[in-house]
Amino acid sequence: MASDLIDRGTADVDFRGLQDGTLNLIVRHRFEKEFYKVVPNMTQEFQDKIEELTKKTHSLQGSLNYYAGLYAEYLLATAFRAHPRLMLTDYFPDASETSELNLSQVLVRVPIQREDGKILNLDVVAESACGRTVLVEVKKRQIKTGLKMVEDFQEKVDIYGKLFPAQPILSAFLSLGDFTQEAKTYCETHGIATASQLAGF
Image (cartoon, rainbow, N blue to C red; front, side, top):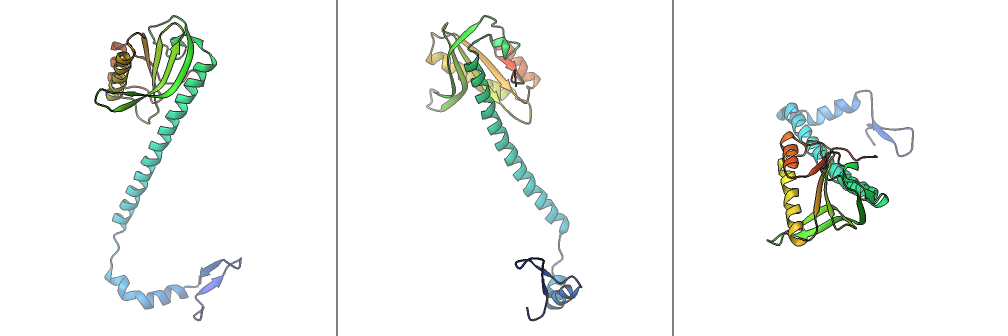
């Protein structure tokens, strides 16, 4: 430039402002009045930036949890398929059902329709040769699974039971973030087997 405010760097496409203070003096001379007219609110600017980054972090964490949950569903379904002769207690230690299952079909993300037309998804549906069906909900969250989530799962179990009344249902909930005590008590009362980690992984 004519005023020699920019130096070349180490590469042909690398440029930088002069480091001897000249650039600062010229910019200040040209824009000093503008600088004095505007008093920056650095505290607010930092707070706004922190809020923006926090929102972005929460969004990324939500996406990570969602995909981690899908991966856990896949791992559980794969384990069921690889070892079809199993007991529910192999994966959910507090399950009351201790007789062996012989899984003939394992499906993930199975849609069911509520009476009002809303579509809900069952994470893992495993059918046993004996006629029983295992329904599993899988969650991966930073916080513990609460009462509302297990109640929502129980609603799915009830809907599935109405759709297939001849199939005895075994229900289980895998929460990789653990459960609140309230949710845990609800599961015990409603016969929902629970686990906070995926056995074998």
